[in-house]
Length: 110
Image 1: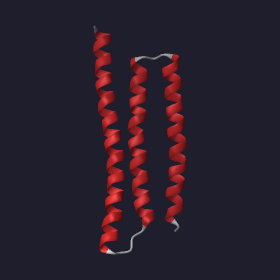
Image 2: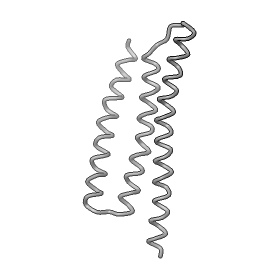
Image 3: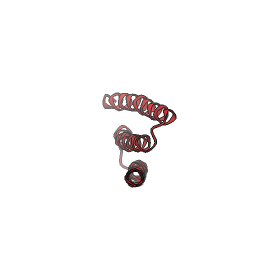
Image 4: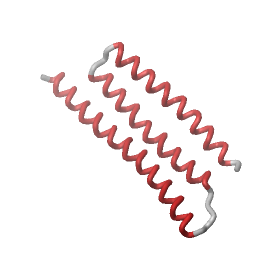
């Protein structure tokens, strides 16, 4: 009874956090596209590096929520396969984060 309630509770939070992460990433993409279009329409010069930096930050923030989802999934059903998948997700997120942060720092000097 308690285990089933706990699993349901975790599954609800998985859905919520996955939705939040997805919304953040989509919002960042739409905002970047809107900024570029508005700048093109108004014929003003703009710094593409700033737009990329903002988009990259949104992507990284959204990916943090996906890690939480993976942790919740592993807590619900802690098998070796789930632990391996969690480790791979965290590794991929770490590598992505490293390279995206490196890209942000490079654009600072342009």
